[in-house]
Length: 152
Image (tube, rainbow, N blue to C red; front, side, top):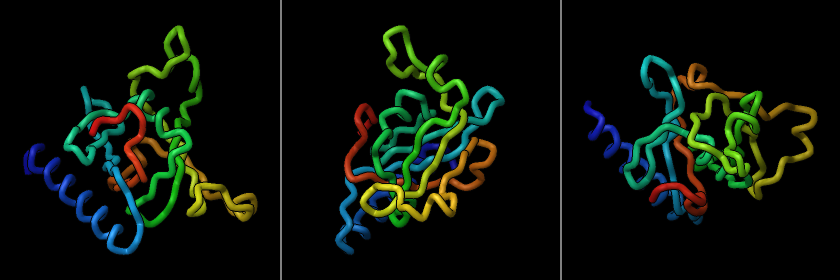
């Protein structure tokens, strides 16, 4: 399957999942597929958006997910942020704005449906890091609205 067909297939899947969730009373206005991609011989995170854009996951895009509840396959609420060790130094410009440098490590935190972390998480870790190498299967993520700065 060529890249264009893959993107169209992902778009259709996102539309189906969003429509299916709406029929069950869950409203999602945006979705994307997080996957790993190879660029110049290096694995990195990639995205395919509801609008059909295919691109690498940059710190600028990742930063705009701060505070946004992402529903994994429309079922499990999670927060996603950078887990890069030097998360502030190399990934912001002189004015402190996130750059288009590629995100290399993500921190994924499972949440309650209202977006908070339940007290039980203190006893049972529900947080982990993810790299392009450990992301062996793509993740379909849905949000209530399009995150700020993300393509249509």
